[in-house]
Image (cartoon, rainbow, N blue to C red; front, side, top):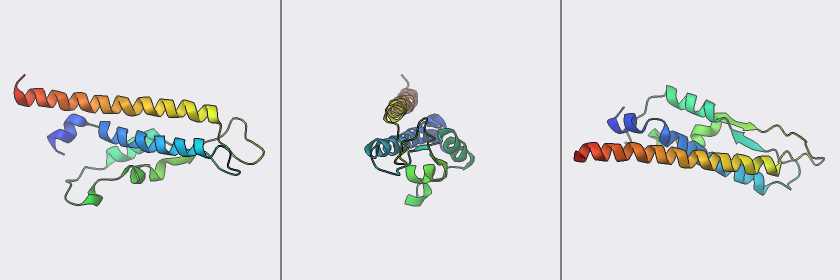
Amino acid sequence: MSIIDKALGVFPTAAAVQARRLEIIAGNIANASTPQYRARDVDFKKVLADAGDQPRLAVTHPRHIDTPEQLTRDALMFRIPLSPSRDGNTVETHIEEAAYGDAAGRYLAALRFAEGALSGMRKAYRGD
């Protein structure tokens, strides 16, 4: 594990997973009127737990670093609706909008934490 990996910690993975989660939730909202569509979401804790168990590899080949789709593949789950519709669609727009706002905030927070870590490394390198 490189010094940059140690300094950034889990934040790059968290940002990638939240970005993927934003895509999934946006898809749910887009399919709110599609019959038989089942709303999906990502189990964020499961993704981070799975990602934390694996050592990071040097980027000598594009497949050494998992894409957000690969990270979330096993943690994708269906959302259980509070009040299912008659046509079988499980998207509840108000729930999806709240989840989207939550994921957007968490995405920005992960980016800001990573930015802070990089800023600290720059200052230490320059001797500020």
